[in-house]
Each structure stands twice: as structure tokens, then as C-alpha cells.
Length: 188
Ligand SMILES: Nc1ncnc2c1ncn2[C@@H]1O[C@H](COP(=O)(O)OP(=O)(O)O)[C@@H](O)[C@H]1O
Ligand SMILES: O=C(O)C1=C[C@@H](OP(=O)(O)O)[C@@H](O)[C@H](O)C1
Ligand SMILES: [Mg+2]
Image 1 (spheres, rainbow, N blue to C red):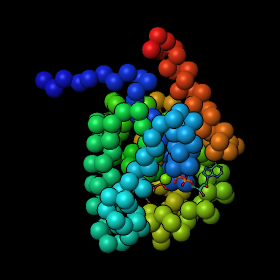
Image 2 (cartoon, rainbow, N blue to C red):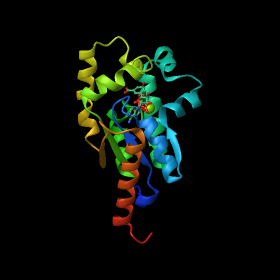
Image 3 (cartoon, rainbow, N blue to C red):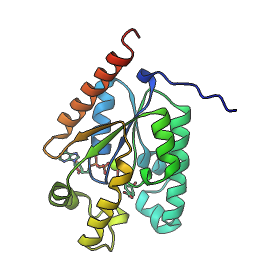
Image 4 (cartoon, rainbow, N blue to C red):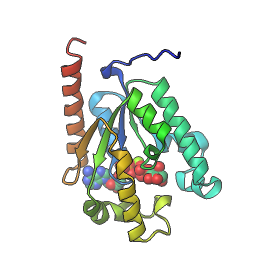
């Protein structure tokens, strides 16, 4: 049987999940700075490794190819790295292998935002840069938003970010993670 090493909580990657535009990239960067850790944005890492933007990859290689690349990278990062802050793309966590790797090896924070807040405040900021939103009606996007919630429900911790600025959300995550470390690993 394969031996599984248990990673101490303090060394586990902190992984941010949630719908596109929730703030995973922005907040992940801030959390990394506050904890003096390296930050990896999975989308940016894919763009760097493949020499193309995510919209270009969707257009030239198709979504299925992007999903495979995304899955393999996340499973690799979860299995082979520690002490990182990882921000996932909003669709990554729909893949079971991704969920399993994140939950087994990392500490998963769900950035939770209501549909109303998202529609009013975030949609205008991201509508032109996310290929998944292309050619969809608002009703279709709303359906996608709610379809994805059952996957995001599988997390270790949740931050409701409706009224929070990115700095405040990052502070909450840092506070919560430090509390967890102190309670479960007080002598490390
Ligand atoms: N807490 C926040 N309040 C207001 N705007 C935010 C907040 N977090 C992120 N944003 C803005 O929302 C947009 C999407 O943020 P981003 O970090 O790229 O989200 P994601 O990585 O989840 O898609 C950006 O324009 C960013 O500046
Ligand atoms: O939700 C999705 O399917 C996607 C979200 C994007 O990341 P963000 O969640 O950081 O916007 C990016 O991975 C890609 O455009 C697909
Ligand atoms: Mg992002």
C-alpha cells in the first residue's frame, strides 16, 4: 500500500477556491505577503509555462486541454510542494482529482460571495477577460454560479467576502489560519 506522509498543518499549502472574480488572485497575493510565503496563481503559472494567455489557450487548444493542464499542475503542486499560497482558477475545483488533492494535502479556503454582489460588482470587472463568460447570457452565468456551489462547499474554511475589501479578507484568512495552527499544533 502507498505510504502517505501527513503534512504538519503549519507546512500545508493554503489554497483559495471560489467563483471567478471572487478575488482569489488578489487576496492570495496579500495572504502570501502577510505570511512571508511564496504565492502561486495557477492560471498565471499555466500562462508562464505554456507561453500563452488563458484566453489564447481556450481559443487555440480548447477548454478540455486547459482543464487537463490545470488538473495536472494542481495535483503536482499539492503533492510536491509545501508552505505555498495557491490561488486556483474558478473551474479547477469542479474536477474531482483536484478536490481530492487539495483537501488531502492543503488547507482549503472558500471565498464566498453572493450572486447579487458578484453580478453587480465583479461581473463588470472580469466580463471581457474570462473565456468561460464569453457568449453566455446572464441567466446562463447565474446557472453556472449556482451549479458550482456544491463543489465549493467541500472546503476546510469559508470567508464571506461580500462586504470585505481584499485587505480585510486577507486579514481574516491570516487570523483564521494562525488560530488553527495555535490550537492544533501549539508547540511547533
Ligand atoms: N474584496 C474585493 N473587493 C472589491 N474588488 C475586488 C476584491 N477582490 C478582488 N477584487 C477585484 O475583482 C476583480 C477580480 O479579482 P481576482 O483577484 O482576479 O479574482 P479571481 O482570481 O477570483 O478571478 C479584480 O478587478 C480585483 O481588483
Ligand atoms: O471559472 C472558470 O472556469 C475559470 C476561471 C478563471 O480563473 P479565475 O477564477 O481566477 O477568474 C480561469 O481559470 C479560466 O478563465 C476559467
Ligand atoms: Mg484568478
